[in-house]
Image 1: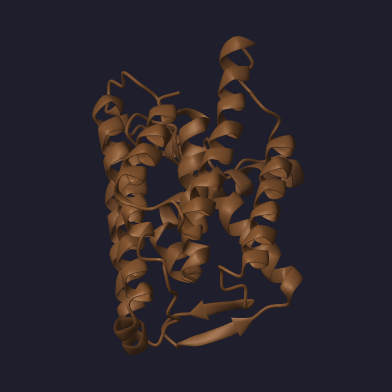
Image 2: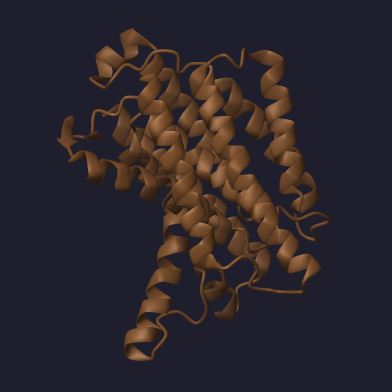
Length: 286
């Protein structure tokens, strides 16, 4: 449950550099802490009751949806988030407008999906940390662009005021993950646990929603997406066809079953994350 230290270090170091009166920082911290609590309960069930399944998945997701629903209502009430029901499509510089209900479902899908995708990726020593750090660096660039009027105007994207301070939170989280990674490399001396992975994933997804760069975020986080999809495909295939597509899911275990050494799998996923990050940023800047 090393994720506890990641979250505490992030919140503490963020508080040293910025004013928590910024509503974006408040809501991100609230979501991060709430998802960390869910993960902590899950970890404690596994450890104390020797239950490898932990908190039942359906209950966990329902609670996550409720938390996000409360956050959306609060953000909308305070009018501090661009709930304009629009999703920016890069390359063609076009905004797709969704019905309000569909947009709320979309927000839930992004945040809950990202949190659980990061959780699924946390299966090998050191695997999840580097992709998370790479994603955070990309988000810092995106935040800087949307928070700077001149750059936002040049790139023809929505300028969103007061988001610049989120950069400090991202940097704090990067520092905390780096500190954790030193002890999590093979052979790992400490593990992130659900408390860390759910909190980090929800934070990534929420920031992408706030700065309205969901499609770019999808591209830069394709490693997490692939891990999540591998589980969905595996479970669906077995239930429908009684056949498995992968030797084992999530995807990193499939490569292990193919005979790849754990270190090779981790490095391959790190490299893939860096590639998708570069691809996403190139598409963003075109």
